Length: 453
Ligand SMILES: [Zn+2]
Picture 1 (cartoon, rainbow, N blue to C red):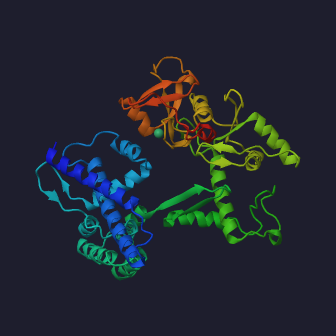
Picture 2: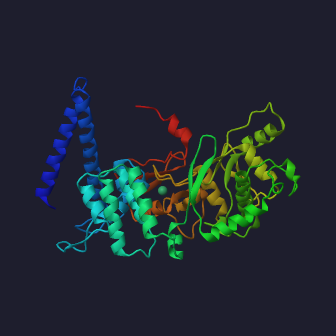
Picture 3: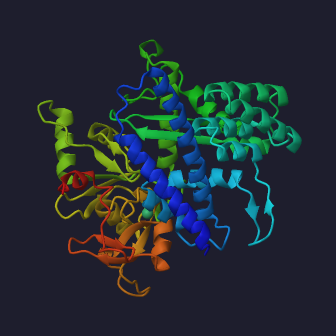
């Protein structure tokens, strides 16, 4: 506790609020363009000061200088700020790079990893996009670049960041890379550190953008499979492996896409991928008998409308036409069919059944993802949570099993949340500050049905 500092901070925040009110309430219709430009500059500088302070506070919350961090503090911060959990992680990570760390109260702070960026942030001289470019350029340098060279690179980048726009800083980053690593020498650990595949959000047309960096090994596999999908070979929607090459009008990019599909489907069908949380690795597609029957008729009869898409265990949607096509491929290790009324699974096609498989499938049907209100983790990322209290030797009643992601499952286990089964058979969560609530984020139809106050 430091009452003097607390009083100073509160007084300053009150003054900021008061200033915002004045700014918002003052008409600027007649101030003229030069004044307006000066105001824009001041507001941008203020926003940057603000951001620097937000990073500092986020860093101190996640790693307090005056005591150990409380459990679940990042999740709590995300809830309080109404920002995505990944945003809190991002801020905490950056804060850790620009903060001096104290090992104990009263001890001297160790210098931050990026001291010049820290200073520019504190002085409100750089914006979010500047920070991204500075970090991107520094992180692109290979491991063998010496600390002295890295420090010099940081100095150059930050100096330009305080004077130029982010695009300019990106150019400086490229120049530094060319100068410090002219031959593009990276060792295996550099490559492993950079490997990543990013899958963008599913668009309204159902398509997803992917990007990333493949290791030489990953590229070798992809090249080998892509090479086999040469013109005429492995054309989708054909029975035979090869067709006349002259009738194959796919672009090289389309063939690479088909190679990826073929490789992944072959791996799934092989049954060699083992188990994921108790059931064989497979695509879980959730649909109802009613929709499936209608889709089967719609494929044959154009006058029958296609029912709404199926939902996957990853939280994406899969058009029924494609689902039927996947089922028609012969091997179908990946379809879970539910009765539309009871939401009980009727049929789990060819999936390897382990003792708990059916319970998990029921969770896919009812919960679709983590049940903690506001949590976006889809079914594939969830553990089965036993509610209210599970007796290891007791009956494995599926009505007492619910989806929860790992962090939320553990947070409940240590008492951060209390869970109860609601009258509608869903799992309600409370952190003690209000009544239990259910998670509607995996049930968009419920989100839209909620009444506005
Ligand atoms: Zn969760």
